[in-house]
Length: 109
Image 1 (cartoon, rainbow, N blue to C red):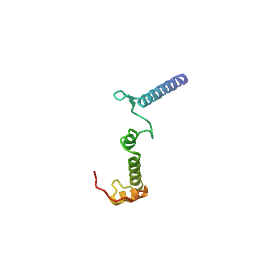
Image 2: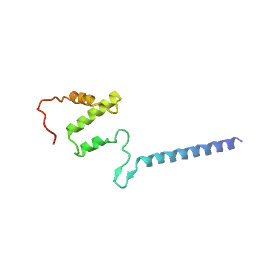
Image 3: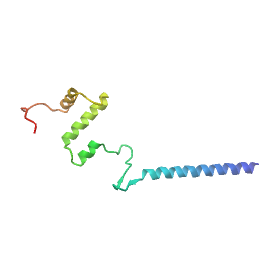
Image 4: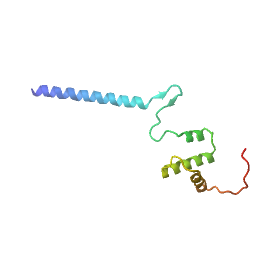
């Protein structure tokens, strides 16, 4: 009777270890997936994913000044919980960045 109990416990432990090993393998496989179409790692990990704005700035699609403005607006929206700031609020952000009207107005091109 005691040997049956030991055998049963040993089988449960072995089954649990096998299940844990399969689970670890699944997690490891998921993390190392490479997108074959692009040749890029799909999962960069926490804090590693680039925003569209950062990607555009790094690829030279926008100037540093434009990127700074977008990040300031984004920060304003997060702090004030405002998904769509008014034009007055946008002007406040521009002033907070240090921009002042010093030249005469000109026509848009």
